[in-house]
Amino acid sequence: MLFRFLVFLGLSLTFSINVMAQACIGGVDTSRNQTTPAGLTNFFVLSSEDTFNDPALNTFDPTVNTEIDGDRFDIDIMLRNVASQVAQRQLALDYFLNQFGVSFSTLVAADSGHTQKSWGSNDGNWLLLHYTIEPRYNQRIVYSGGETVPTDGWEVNQGYYRMMAISDTATTNGAWGDAATRTVQQFTFADYGEMRIQKRLPCVTSGFQTSTIDLNYETIRPTFPDVLANYGSAYGYQGTRANIDYNIYRESTALTGKARGRLELKAESGDDYTAQVRMVLKLS
Image 1 (spheres, rainbow, N blue to C red):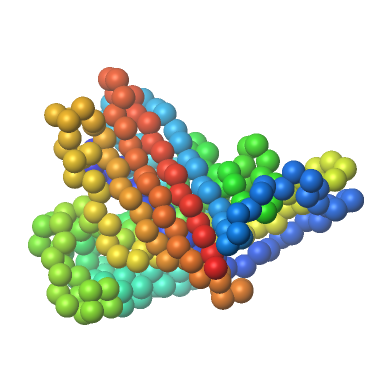
Image 2: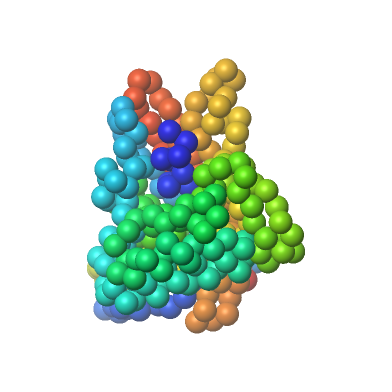
């Protein structure tokens, strides 16, 4: 269960460019704007939740559940061709190599057509995975400082590459940790990915002013899921959880900030599960 659920854990963010804007007739209705405390402009809250029955927990297995295939985000949402997909993958590879000293060059080089869903590291201790968050998780921005977010939120699509340790002998030696060789535990992971937010502001008359915000993201440091939660049935809890902490930035305005939150999978009765994400994003 832990391995499969880890594809769900880990949202890391990076703001870039607004595109495809649609203006309001009569202007945006600001009468219901959220009250923003001092210093909390460019502040967002993201939420996601789904309850499902899955005896084999195939929900998080990309060989069974094609809805979590990262190509769905690349092709259906970002409209990328193969060359653009390969270029985006290379950005992730460069980040993992520079930040953590982990190289996937050998196996990735053999997949120039970007047909695989996972690739092993050169040393055999890490796995690179390509995923998207499937629509049924209803991932939404539910709060935006100083703006009115509709009750159904702003839809968020997400695609990402995940680097995950598959042995207890996995190490890092990149910019994180001052290039010193550090051993990490199995299932430790780091992400590099993107989000596309469908922003909708209510109009004075009717309808919405719409625009699209594209996001990229990267993990600050390797993340390890909560061990007590993973193996803690004796303590009255079954499931997996992880706290997340990411750097975020917006290229178009050079804004930088943090994203922090919790990702959790709860084992309910029988083969029922509830998956949740709660995250705050603050740009300065």
